[in-house]
Amino acid sequence: MPTKEFLLPDEGEVVLATVMEITPYGAYVALDEYENVKGFLHISEISSGWVKHIDRFIQINQKTILKVIRVNKTRKEVDLSLRRLTEEERRNKLILLKKEEKSKSVMKKVALDLQLSDSQIAAFTEKILEEYPSLYTMIDSLLEKGTVVLTKLSLPEDFAKKVYEVAKEKLAPPPVVVNEIIQLSSSASDGLQIIKQVLGSISKIEREDVKTSIKYVSAPNYRLSIMAPNYKIAEQCLRQANEILQKEAKKYRCTFSTKRI
Image (cartoon, rainbow, N blue to C red; front, side, top):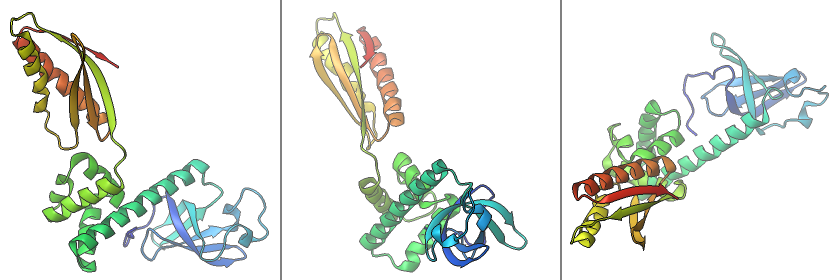
């Protein structure tokens, strides 16, 4: 995870730290996510109970998750607590750390595939972190909005495409599917051709990450299925499909209705 140069954490923030030194009064730690920032974990902040031997709770070089309780920006001092850290906060931090590690592996694969130098990938990463708080938040946005997330930062198009490709392969969740029954009928002499034309109008939904299909069930019922990266996009496309179908059905004087399944 890239370090935050010349910054200090905020009070209440949950941080990853490495234990550097243990004293009778507490432990000095390095904050892994901040450059050249150390913190102090007082013995009274290790456990809610009495602590006689600190090394029973933490060890030198141990990675641990702690909560920031005080920050002196003038003296660049950070006081930390283990006992005030809730299990939910610890669990959420672990999830974020795992996501960020996966994001770093994406960038390593991109650098390897495009034969980027360390200085090039560092420069690209720096530009990303000027806009996003972490690599993972960028990738999360990238998977939802596409390569424009990176190209708008004036990053090369081939780099943007490769990051999207690798992230989709490594990090994208499995697609979701929403289904709906369409009831469509026409009393016209060429009603079958009209129905085919109306149903075919959903091809107007143009998204690379969305697949639509319509299958015959039994007259006048058809199943509309939309596969998308997430439910938000799937629901948006379903609404769009209904608007298109309703407009076309009205144009050809068809009877049209829908039912979610």
